[in-house]
Amino acid sequence: MTLKLPSDDAGPHKVKEEFEIEASDCAALQRILEGLGYRVAWRYEKYRTTFERKDAAGEIVLDETPIGDLLELEGDPAWIDRTAVELGFSPRDYITATYGALFEEHRARNPGVGTDMVFSWAGQSDSLES
Image (cartoon, rainbow, N blue to C red; front, side):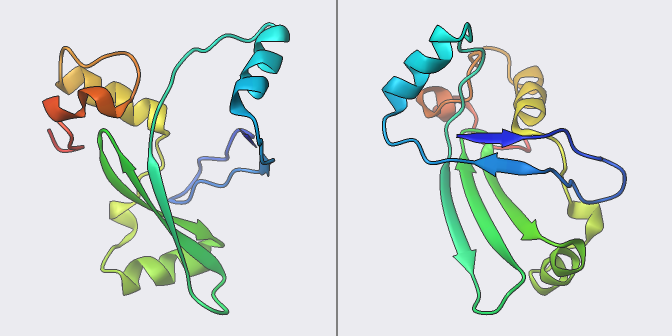
């Protein structure tokens, strides 16, 4: 379970303070949250692969999602910029929007997509470009 505090979206990097814990029983965690008055508002699925280089100041994360594959660089801004160039990207390629915002853009371009970002409907259109 991760809490991401609001970011300072000034500039090309999204900086968020995060707090994360491992939950061994997701069903129990859901019951606890519901017991505190929370309800499921939105669900999304992704497959995440993390890449690390020995002595690197960050990590590369590949997220496979129902709306397309996204590469996330996590580290200090200088490392992100250097690594982006090494991978063939520049700051104009950076996306700082949340998965929620990206999904809403996808839904606007693809009528009939459900309200949750899950793989069960991915066959309809599974690209950020569509």
